[in-house]
Image: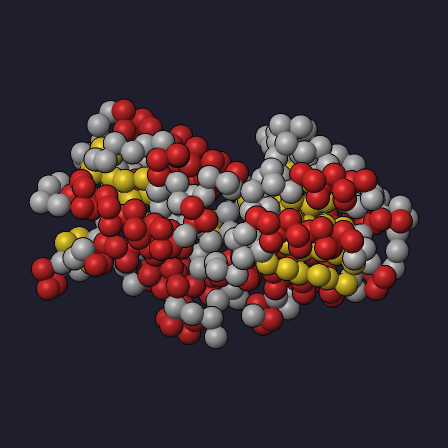
Length: 386
């Protein structure tokens, strides 16, 4: 993956110049555990990410590590294998071994409270990376994508795929009713709430006026959540929905799927049940599905007219912003932010930087993903990184 991140240092510099006018956020503790700036080669940064089960976290980890090491920092990158005690133990170890800054994507937004308290007590700055730290005043800054907008975009894409909306946002010619089902992310991930609420902010009026019908009646996040954003669990739930609500009954037209791994689980279930992108061999029309992360396996599905859309969250940009925030905090400066109101974690409003997102359809894969160097055409064709 290194070929995808050779511009991290330049991206970081460009981001700093571009964002110089943004308002400052809450002050970090600054200067690492000894309270004064140290040379990069003497500075140790602990990075804890959820798992290597999803392509995006591997991509994030590579980008973060390379960006920090280009500056000269020592980087301790660890993955928690979707296990909360493992993440707690890893972060404890990072602190014990002298981390000067922690960059954390928590599996559970509240589970790292003791570790955060210990870090703050040792004057170690904390960056919440993409996943929100809740109920703690010890986090210094949150660097993420606008996950409410991610959900809103997924819902908009679903409506576009159904023909209810046109891509320019105007009303389409299709009137429904369309039968849909909803899937959500993992309940222990605060992002799942933002994504689901963003989606419902768009869909609710179409549900209320009868354009969309949730055949199963499952319309609450607690009912539709997918533990650990698991592809297998999504497939199992879709199997159950098809059996309970669609066997010999109504057609399924669309599924709001919250990320690419969940979408692939849903699509596997649908394919097994005889749905496909064409009507050959007696297949039923593939329902419209959405996603996020633009994982290469799902980009291939979009390109092959199987998955309708995904949301591109450029991890190169997110990693570059996290690197910039780390530099600022270690220098005792306030990191650059562009949101000081939206992210109340229960103990404080966390100053945040929100990185833009981009919807991906078949017709913009080349311009958005290939021309930008995120993937090669061969990788999209193969559905895997090369």
